[in-house]
Length: 362
Image 1: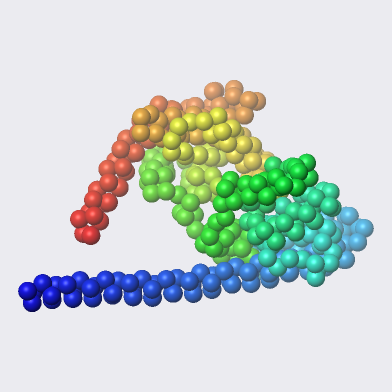
Image 2: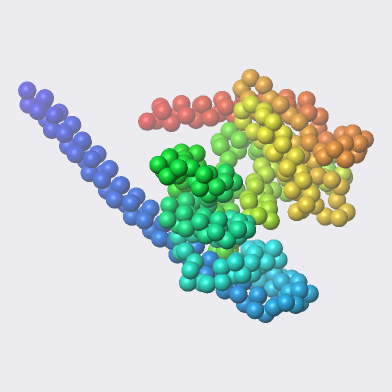
């Protein structure tokens, strides 16, 4: 009987200890979340403020002298990049000048909106629409992704065309379609990282399976010995409109004198996947390719449990070059497919074994 009482007391003590531990954890977690949120607000406020001021100084210095403006932007870009990092391209400095010109009253800026918000708002030409989206973003706490979706889905026009009693339903759509991200996601915003002169963590957006496949694919291409040279993983390219795209793997072939951009997908192949790699090829040719480089090659690899698909992508006017020259130095689609399937099976077994080990230890 005494043994039963002792066991009951021990069990009760463990329960109380677990509850107490959980309360301590939740309190610490809340403090960290609040501190991170404060950091995000402070960094964004400082970044938006200084970019507005940079824009003002450039606009006032240039005035109507277009030729001087081009030379000044090039000069500033070179010197600022050398001292403060890569967030000061000519295009970015031009955006800062436009920011000041569109929002000339610094005191009317909203501290809860990020630089990405303002980049999106600058693309809205009509002043009333722009002010509407600015106010709604700040008052409703929209993320930059939510704002972008609202602009692209003509939220302003749809709201005006809807009777008042039905407007709350339209206003609530965004939280379901594009749920807000946590502070960790915001802290990885490339604009914030550039402003703080911090490097991006290229692995945070890769799943365990995808990361393993990219590792093996990188090794496979380098071991072919046919001119492949590694360039980057999760290579970020930013469009003129401030949209960020990440390419899984980029190589340069010094025999063919061209870039190879690789997009890996887990699941079924869709028309969007094919269109995405074509878009990457065009974007890379526009942003990265040098004058003496040959046209960029795209490669989409879709890995699925049942089947894998490998497809090269070249723009229509480069198909003859691909067939006559590129094919001599590139692995065939079938070779890549076999390698992809083999590595997927190996990696999945390793993941399963690791999970089983963790379960056994638990």
